[in-house]
Amino acid sequence: ERRPDQVDHHPDAALRLNVGATELLAKLAAAQSARFIYISTDYVFDGRTPPYPEDAQPNPLNAYGRMKLAGEDAVWTAYSGQSGSAYAIIRIPILYGRVESLTESPVTELAATLLQGAPFKAEDWATRYPAHADDVARAVTLVAAQLTTNDGASAGGIYHFAGHEALTKCGMARTIALVLGRDPAVVLSDPNPPPGAPRPKDCHLQAPRLAALGFTPRIAFADGVREALAPFVLPA
Image (cartoon, rainbow, N blue to C red; front, side, top):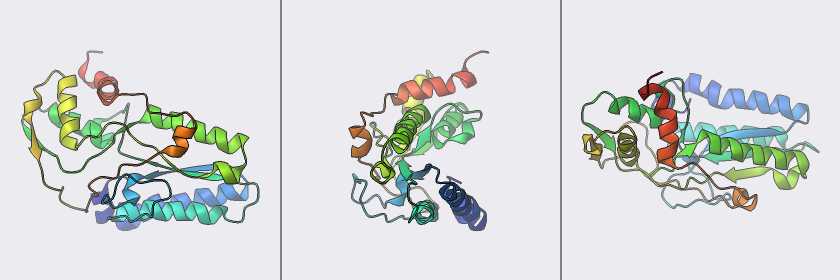
């Protein structure tokens, strides 16, 4: 459950999904000496002192971040003392890409609002670094190869995925408007922190371990949202 407000409203269900399922899968994988990759979030940090290196001390502001951090701890616990086994944790920022429904991602949710046609306010307070799912998949593949072909102890541990474009949700919405051929002026800036669960202001991640593997994100935000939105705005 990626939505911080939903986590606050349904904490027991979110805990079972975000922590309990992770713990079960990690224990089962470790028992078979299997390699394990856990996808975590930049929300394990408080957003006060970016950019965050991979060894930075987490300090989540909301229950969602605390649950994802607990998931990291569950993986570490499952694999501690497991000779020959290896795990990796990949922390990623806000995710988007091809979807079956525009509600699947907080990025494509902005497109759904834009398509309604009326002016609307978009949060212009927190800086985010959107990551396309295809770029994240490339990063996961690289890490998986490291876990498979190298010593698990040196290849495993924490990796960061660093998005290369800094955008608020307002900035994302205005870019989406341009992609859709709409007037970006319909997106009004809201400089206030969003209501509900507290969000970090800037969780920019440093990613030296992925960079050392030759990885860099390839997909520009405008190109990624254009592809993601094509099935919803172009004739079949």
